[in-house]
Image (cartoon, rainbow, N blue to C red; front, side, top):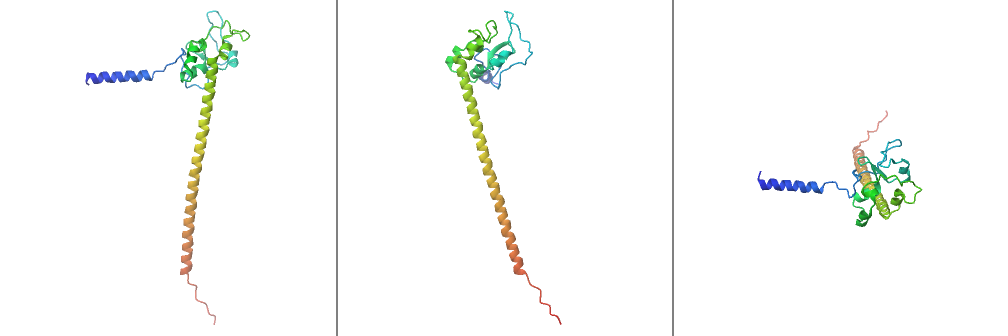
Amino acid sequence: MNKLVFISIIRGFLTFSHLNTYHNPFSLNSDVRHLNAPNQPPIGFSYEHNKNGRKFAHKYFKMYPWIHYDEESKKKFCFTCCKAAEVNNLSEKSLNDADNICKQGFDNWKKIGEKLKDCRLKQHDGCNVHMEAMDRDINAKEDNQQNIIQMTASAAESQRRTNRKNLLSVLETIKLLGIKITNQISQILRNFQPPPPIHCH
């Protein structure tokens, strides 16, 4: 193989690999683009203690349904924000303004109590970045639902046209059969010769 051709092939392969490499704007290791819900282990799952000797409590999943547990980093992320970022559904400003629950994951449970004013989860739940991600997620779901409705309506209309076409075909066949049978009966009647009368002596 020519050396220049070989080099061109290698460059093309490297370019294609680069374009198709999964890139996450945050440090979340999991690819959540194809997930419909965050990863939330069941009750009884043993979470790791952080450097302060504290660990995550399962009750926070109910309080903040967007919490996503990343099994590789052992940290918690915001599923809604990370997924919005991965599908390019967050503004540049939000990507820059995102907190550590999005960018690096969260495992500092020292000030996590829901009664604390500076609760990190509560702060994230009400921040502009999270609000934007939630709005984009709702809009995306509504658009998807609308697309499904339109596809369903289109499929139903297509089926109605097919059924009508089939019915007309059946009616046309019945009509032709009726004409054929009528012609055959007429032919029989025309060819019918009544028997000669019987004379009694």
